[in-house]
Image (cartoon, rainbow, N blue to C red; front, side):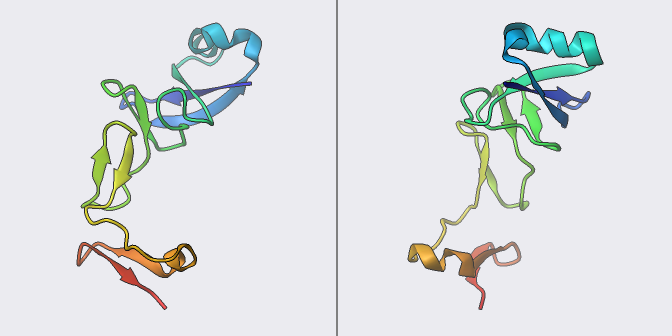
Length: 114
């Protein structure tokens, strides 16, 4: 099965549909002819357009990728992966302790939460 995202006039994803593999080769036109609108293919394994499109994601034509919502104003876009990164690296803590940290936009840092 193939996945196609409908875009609004600002390249924001409105919905994602699953279509049969038999029409994947021309899926953008197939979706347009059936539903109208503008469509771009996406994939769960991120081999097409960097990330699987989600409602609210933005499609960047120059990067040819789907970008999730920016989680915090200070975060920086990785243009190769179309993902947001914190301006400060995540603390070097044991894997089981990662859930005890959250981003604090006020201090632009990771803080430990108890």
